[in-house]
Image 1 (cartoon, rainbow, N blue to C red):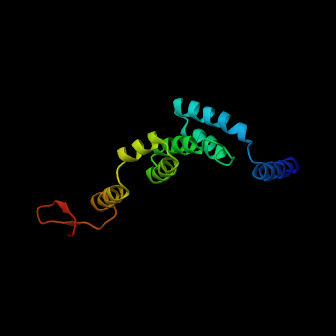
Image 2: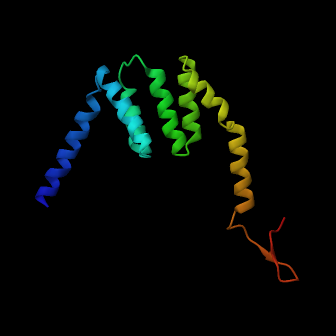
Length: 139
């Protein structure tokens, strides 16, 4: 128990220290490359973490970082976050981000599809039996 308490204190101290130290600008390029490697290995959460860490710097290639973080979000099926990152990259003049935005479904369409899936496949909605023995929805 005593060792466990010290471990908790160590982890808290480590996390406090990590949050106060921002990556150096030169480190951003290393994080970008490592994040791209993670994407190639289908390790999307690790890639997302590296791109986010690199964006904490005063990097001269923020557009590139926003674009690749958007790619990681899209791979994780978080289209809303992907779209936001692609927009940020596009505003900074990143042409592949502009193309990625054109290829993504609109937020309205995604919301409509989500709503329709909810209505059609809502399993807990009360059902009633028809005289023929078939189950139907009450609408």
